[in-house]
Length: 335
Ligand code: SF4
Image (tube, rainbow, N blue to C red; front, side, top):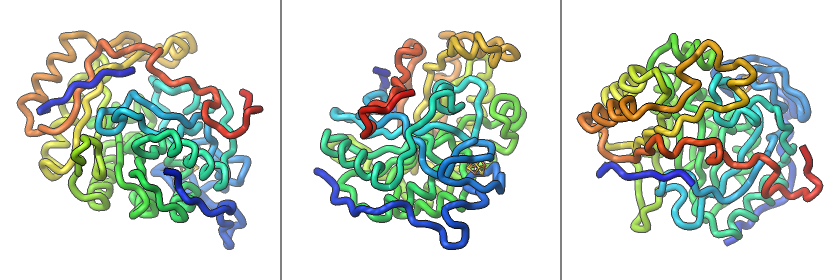
């Protein structure tokens, strides 16, 4: 389990039914759900866009997760749903086996998603959290529209989001957990093929804040609504992190959001072996103490006061959840 330190720093009633068919397209669409705006047609089984994902959400794990910030995990865990595929493509991806679809997901129609959500609620989780699901946001929004969940809905995403797609989630999501990965366009291009990352993520986070308003922690210490922005410090790219702190200070309303600084970057062995990290030698190691201390000092003198810090000693592949079909309704699920 990951360790965070602070800086002052029931069962749902679920209707039955499948995903609504888009009468114009018959369950397919020219997809512009994310900033890639591929414009390709996706059907229930195939996707030809950057994310290579069909329209039907591809679920890989649904379980209580205890590695999030304390205001998300609490004592009983966050009810996380992990999906395969991704629209961002980070060379160092900590979840590369699912983001690159090396493991096939389980096609989860609306009934399956409801069933999985019910099961998580029965386990007593504090919230229902969709992880890296932006490329499936429309069918998931359709499911959420039919539910009245007794716990907050969390949207855990890369920050590289389309404002129009976020608007389809308005009123359905209580808590946004976006990353803010890059302040530097060149770095966004090099590491994630997304030179427009900084301005796109900033616009997305502004939209999230517009929807949720300032963050609200309950008396139980759990986040009820709001935006918690995460940033993973990348070894060798400390200036990027300092500029991210600058942007959050300068561009977003003070005191409106929580900030989580993550120091547990882990070089994934498989990505070292397949050459993905070859051009980026500093991404083949963990963060040094000197790097972390420099960021910590900078953050301490910033106006960002509410949030969490995860220190580098939390690093390690063992913190990555098993993407093995846990929690999926088919006992016959196999990779
Ligand atoms: S969700 Fe996938 S297909 Fe749609 S625009 Fe994004 S990358 Fe392209």
